[in-house]
Image (cartoon, rainbow over all chains, first blue to last red; front, side, top):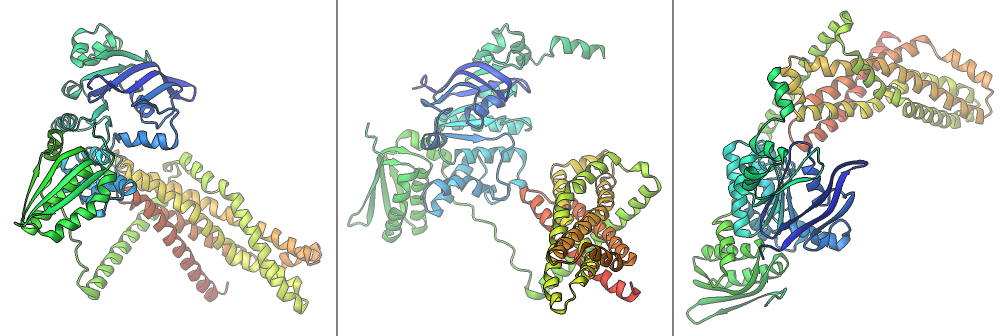
Length: 260
Length: 377
């Protein structure tokens, strides 16, 4: 079951209006793996994510989630795809006027007939899994950055998704919190068998969690590398990939920096 | 596989009081919902000292299913009984280990009402006094800085001021004019109907002119500006406050009042008399239209207007607009700067800006009415 593709992206081109940000994108995410989309700032990795979760329509190509093309899916079909995925946004996107618990239980209240008590219990269990049960009745504004991201993951988990999309989960967190978050991702992946698609540029967490990665580049406007992160770091001869994994400056920029 | 999309449960109790609950099928969100009430109700009633849950035939179990199992455990604990969950598949046991929670966190108790009416009164007084202090100090600060700007006009950011003046003034001409026209028409129409009985419809012009110049023109324009621009100021400054932009100004050494409040105040002070003039002019046009319909010759109408409109009425009305403008801009900006945190905060301060802005404008109008009466204007 491990090699079965759960997401297939075929010949995708994405952008805004006439501006093409990405083109010729082809890749597969396999069931149960932790898949990372890498790239520098402005490389279009968030655009790619937005296309994969249907927030943005691609200019061309197809995105299949368990065989359903989400580009053309409508109505019931689209809803059934949405039930399979959970998304945790970069800044959490928690609803600020509700407690953390209500944030997590919202989808359950809307889409199930479970009694109130049951919904609260499920929500608290999800919060417990991310280590936030004690903060259940706090407001999002009372949480720290790391807690907000964990609450967002708990909310994304509420409907037991098969695929979890995380947009820069560890950006802006201290190394310890960031490591804890990586630990949580590994745990959820191992115990729940959830497939993860993570957009990130944090090197340490890429090496810790990612099974496979693809890297998109601003200049090439497409995937410049794909594979296991360690292999890319050690064996890639693409200069952009090497720079990224070895934290080097662009040769041109490096020169100007030195002469400044 | 034995993949059914149903979940079933069967509860039996033997003579020793031992309970046996057999679960089978898919325990997902939808199936658990129907199971939850019936099975937990049964268990609560039965109060078995020992419960065995046989979960060997559970083929799928998500968060809701796990919660059901945990709920059984909680019920047994509350009844002082024991529970044993048998044959749960290993992958579900792992889930259980991750999600299992021994007790639910209960909502924090809200602090009770501050000991009755007297406490409430004290709290209210304290709050109002603080609010009043804040408003007074803000007024003082703004006036002092406005004076400084009048002495050194270059200290004001004129570019921002002009943009705000365009938004609050030029863009509002249409709606202000329309409002004036409608009010002029309605006023003339209503009074003309009554005055006609006495053959005095010529004097409708006198009435409309006085009412429009002294009261309605300035007041309506101020109400419009409060809801159009006062709210916008509160929302803009509130969003800046929430985004920490106001803090950024402060740490850059730029005074937020000087940078944000003064351009808005000056812009409103400049445009509100002009808008009021537009309002009044269109009001007269509306009045003239009605007069024309009622067959009053336009030459007579013009003559009545010229005779009725005194400079004291005209300027008395215009002086008020400056005070209204100051109140609208000041309150809008203050509410914006007072914005707290969270997504509802901006909405709250916008509401507060409009409500207190309107109250302030109408109260100020009342004060003017009394003052003008004693001054004989």
